[in-house]
Image (cartoon, rainbow, N blue to C red; front, top):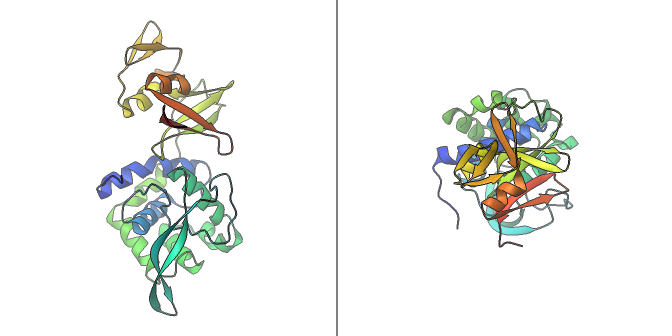
Length: 262
């Protein structure tokens, strides 16, 4: 079932994922990406997680898109006329996977003008000029959404990561829940550590601290304390919440899934 979200809820749900891919070097400004997701989906996160209308096209599977597709009705502007049609769209394991696959597309020569654009307005126009969309009104629609929902604020809010001294040199690992980035873990010596309170409470857990250890719903877990934040192994947190942590080597991500899922 697709959850019904208000526009503000839709934006808030996407912001952590948009900020994470930007930290990882995405060329697309967060304001433009958020506006594009609103425009392409009408503010709905579909279970195939393709929020940008990326068609299968002649692309080959990669770590972020495994070749799955769904056929949906759409329309394009052909010779100045709007034409309805069915098209095959890419299916993703998460919104993060979609955005990373989209970034692979934007890294091609075709989108060099998108990468070179400095402002959201320039980038919106260059998406159309580069052929991402066939609707001549596409840039103005994006710019209207950017202004209407004050999305430029997110262009300057992505740079900082959670403060830590213990994990300063560790690899950052996106933690995915229900298709979205719910937290960012730190990979150290074979274990991914996560801030227990922020992630645990977002999943409905009661987080405490006793005897030098984080407690999750009363269960004490092996812990590390860094800058007043308690960290636990993501697998231990998942187990305490009757979930499992699934590591995807190709994308260096962890997905917290229901324990009974394969």
